[in-house]
Amino acid sequence: QQSSRKHPNIMMETRSISLGNLIFQVELPAFEALSHYLDALRQALVGTEGAEEIVQEVENRMAELFSADLAGASRAIRIGDVERVITT
Image (cartoon, rainbow, N blue to C red; front, side, top):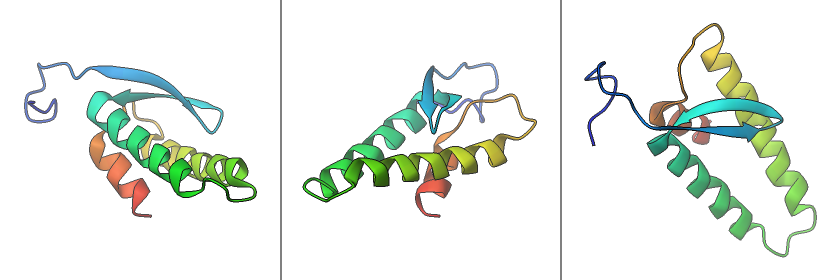
């Protein structure tokens, strides 16, 4: 799949998501990576007391980081944004 950054005339499919009570537009590859990460986190926490609260805190922190990254920008979250937040 071609990147919208290399070919500015190509529109990348996006999804609207709610993360940490904020709404974001996310490019499809970034959405898939983020969904996979959060699903894996939920699986890793199965049976752990407070698992939902942990996931919520992670989502809240991700939302803070995405908001800071996108401050003033009118663009969707990209795969690089997700990768950077996941490794933070």
